[in-house]
Image 1: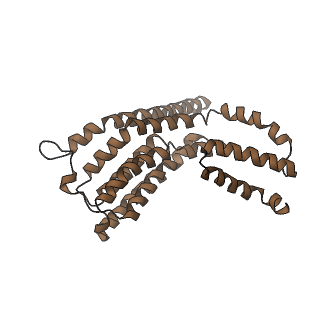
Image 2: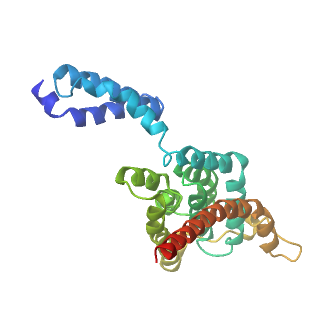
Image 3: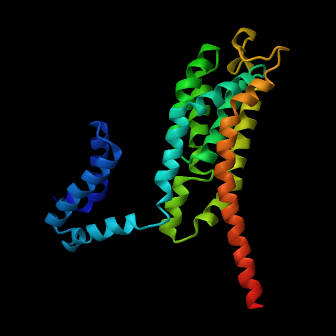
Length: 270
C-alpha cells in the first residue's frame, strides 16, 4: 500500500493504457480513469475531499473558455476534409503531378500533409487520409516500407506545429499567452520542418533511388489531351484552394485588424 501511495501517478497512467487497450474511446477513458483514481486517492488520504467539489466549477470554467472554443471547430474542418473527399482528391492529383519524379509520391504526401495541417490542425484527418490512400500505392510501386510509413507518419504530425494547431491552442491557454503569439512563433519552424522533410526525400532519391521509384507511365492516369497534367491538377484542387483561402483569409484579416487597432491606440497615447 505504501508503494501504491507514492506511485499513484504512474499507476494512473498504466490504468489509462489499460482502458485504451480495452477499446474504450479516449474521452471516456480519460474521464473514467481520472474519477476512479481520484476516489482511490481520497480514500488513501493522498488527495483532499474538496478536490471533487471543485469538479463542476472546473467543467463550467472550461466550457466558458473562449480560447478552447476553437478546438471543436478545427476538428470539424478536419472531418469535413476527410469525409468530403477533398483530401483524397488533392493527394491523388499531387501524386500524379510529381509522378515522373523519383520520390514523387513522398513529395505529394509531405505537401498534402502540410496543407492539411495549415487548414485543420487535426492529426487524425491527415494521417487517416494519407495512410489509407498513399501507403498501398507507395508499396505497390516499389517504395521502401520504412520510407513510406515514415513519410506518412512524419507528415501527418505536422499538424502539431503548423498553425492552426490544437496543441498550440491548449498551450496558449495553459501558459496564459495569446494564441496569435503562439501561432507566430510556430509558423516559420513548421515550414522549415516541412522543407527538411523534402530535403531528406531528395537525398534518398539521389543516394537510394531504388527506395523511391518514379511512377510508371501506366500509373499516370490524369492527363490533358496534349499529355500534360497541369490543368487536371488545377481543376481538382480548386475546392481545396478555396477552402484554404477562406481559412487563412479570415485569420489574416483578424490579425491585421488587431494590428490596426493597436496602432490607433499607440497613436492616441502619443
